[in-house]
Image 1 (cartoon, one colour):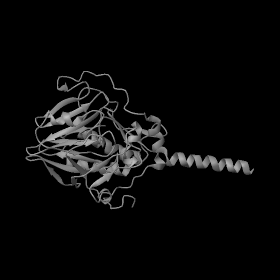
Image 2 (cartoon, one colour):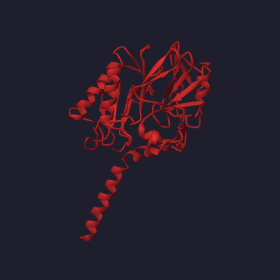
Image 3 (cartoon, helix red, strand yellow):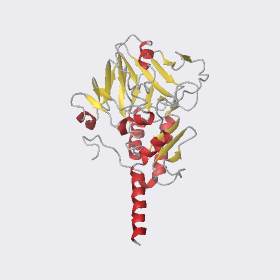
Image 4 (cartoon, helix red, strand yellow):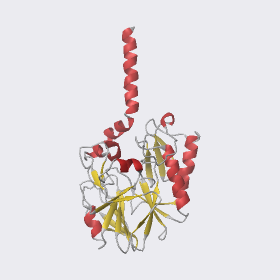
Length: 323
């Protein structure tokens, strides 16, 4: 009998470990030793030009460019936003190819790099920038007394493709709710957690453009990560809806199919917000075990934890993220 009891204890222990490590197990299952094979180049339409055989550039308006990596498996999109005094590069892809040189070919203004969050496919990694800005969250500032922020594995996820964690040398801390002045152009920093607890979006009220990083885009939204949260997504969606008018163009950081940059509309953000309420109330049935896939609309899915693991706590900007 004791052998049966020991066996049951072992099974329970293994199950508990699997639940605790569920996030890592998913990504390790998808991981590779390095950069995945490139996708075939597709027709990107008349509004997009190929810079080389990897990067594309699309003019969103006269002072805004989407820099695409459509041959990379995650099809990343970063945005160069130009003012009269400086430019801002919002995200920088995985850094397998030199996005900095592409950005510098589009403007003669000094460029500040600002990641929407810290996942490896947004931070540029081995690419260095003359000036780096980072969201000013208290727990991040506490970890960077010398303005050097060493990213953790959960923040960076570089192990998915064999990319080592990086340290960001911060020149400028940008607080949620504040404005970044580029000279004749201002960007509002919106705190939009959900995908990660450190995610931000940028709103250009004058141009009526919203840059959302991985918070929302056409495709599967990841809300099952160790630093994701359903309550976070609620707070982020509420911030976006209260900050941007219905006519705002919404530009995300990934796409599924060509052509061009991933663009949605504010109604999609409202659909996400409504779906969150329905998921919490048990009115939407998800598919799968982990992650559980919820359909938001015909463009967007939300990949979340099972209901019994979902965290609906609304976030606070605390000095201790674990409080």
